Image (cartoon, rainbow, N blue to C red; front, side, top):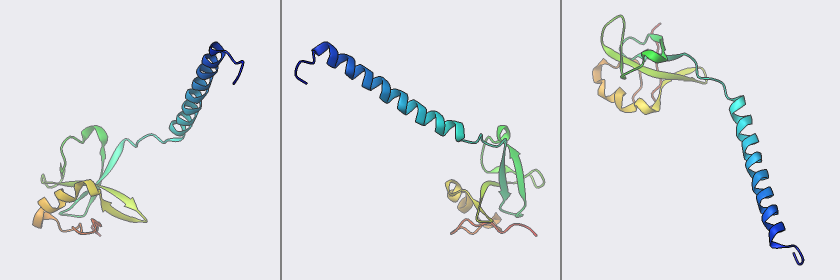
Length: 116
């Protein structure tokens, strides 16, 4: 850039930096705007009974949660994939710790067999 002074190069650098920051901001804003808010409830399954429960997020303190019907701490979060319920992989260790109380979650695949 012969003849292009140091002042002009500095201005060009600042302008390019501003454009880059604005571009990143637009992309992030678009991604956040398209994101859906988290639901107010989380689906849990009782590994002992196979029954599912919708639990308010603000009630989730310590997992496994207590089953409101049995008083046992046997409720684990689950998600639905392809029409099948699965315990969240993060809680694989909890499935093992529940031992023989687990009657409805495959410890290998974490697939849930719900109560009929």
